[in-house]
Image 1: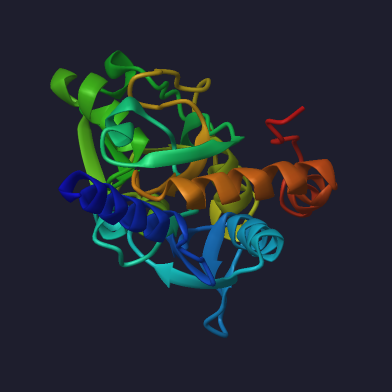
Image 2: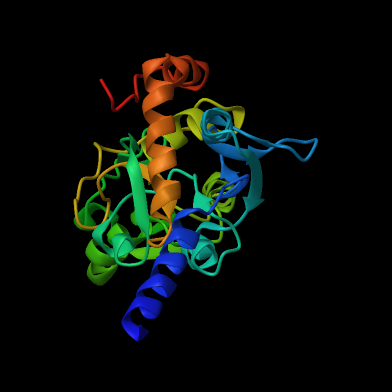
Length: 258
């Protein structure tokens, strides 16, 4: 009888866990990263990731609530349940996989350096020795720069958000900045404040630090939510929603499903 009672108790607990119903999904975003996510003058969160998540929430029949969070604290905040998922151009790395789970891949996130137009700088430790390079704190670009450049005499300057990196680059406090190529292109170089800057060398590649493209961050214990997100992602690819959204923001195809 004791075995039966214990078995029933576990069954009840298991069924209760499996029966969690998601009516609202809180989304953590770093709102300093246009065109993926930023804060509009009216206080509304806008950008590609925001529109994509809104489409996913519609497919899942849940209410979306966006929560602004600096990148360097975004994974700890997810783990302590400040929000339920991260949709913020979050790159998948083995180090991050130790802490959280990820949805299916969203899009590639190549890293590339920018500097003043005409600058001879290249994304190598030899070229950057004695220079100051800005990175967003907590980013994969910071991890790369600190692993490969900083030990060889390059000063790596982390900032709380990407807007601060661009502000100091524009005023000359930095010699260069390393960040996501898509974000830098649409969110800086194609804007008035980026008119005097351009690409400095080719894409920076490193599977260990730069990672394997972006995905939605989910707590390891929220397997059902991850499954819901992956089904919704498949739907927005299948019905053309993803393609429609990407064309609104980018001049290149970022769809990883094709």
